[in-house]
Length: 79
Image (cartoon, rainbow, N blue to C red):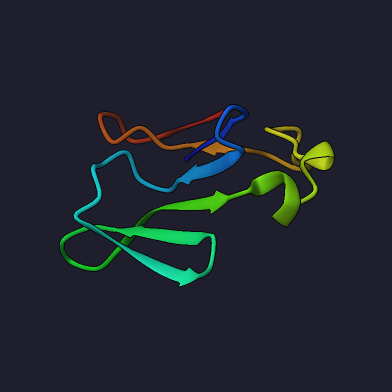
């Protein structure tokens, strides 16, 4: 999962899966869900993010507890 904020476009994108979306659905004005061909959500875009969210509290990482990283090429590892 990746989270990116594009300041020049004021857009926040949450990538749920690293694949190109097949189509998109606007769940509500300014909130776009990108979907795979079989209907899985692969990303979420929030337009005008500075108005729709509290970007000043946006944190990447720093979550409490243990984070597990799963590598499909191995049996998985914990960091």
